[in-house]
Image (cartoon, rainbow, N blue to C red; front, side, top):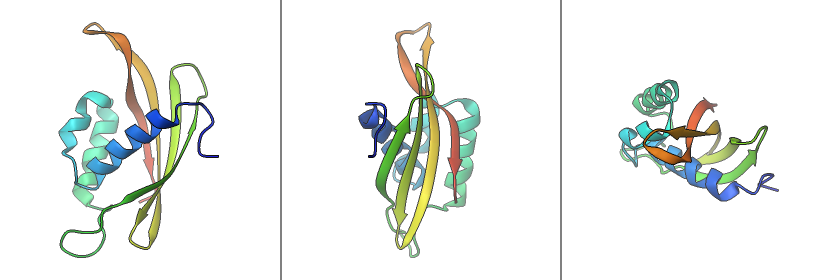
Length: 118
């Protein structure tokens, strides 16, 4: 089963956003408010490497295949996703944590860790 926590829609939404940035189909700055500084720096490095692009001038658009999520603690979501790029299958894992800010009374999810296979 692709979900274990009931948060699979949320996990998939964040995976799609991250994948769009990593593949160059969304600007990196759109993740700035959704990620810690460390994760944002990792994302910018991966974008510069262009490792999620297929061969050719435009490169193939990566396709999100499956998304698995787990919640090791309240307010924490760990997500693993498989991504198809041409004939390759890549893996993406990230951690989301709920944070409150003075400007936002409702807790918001932020990327706090990122691991990739590429």
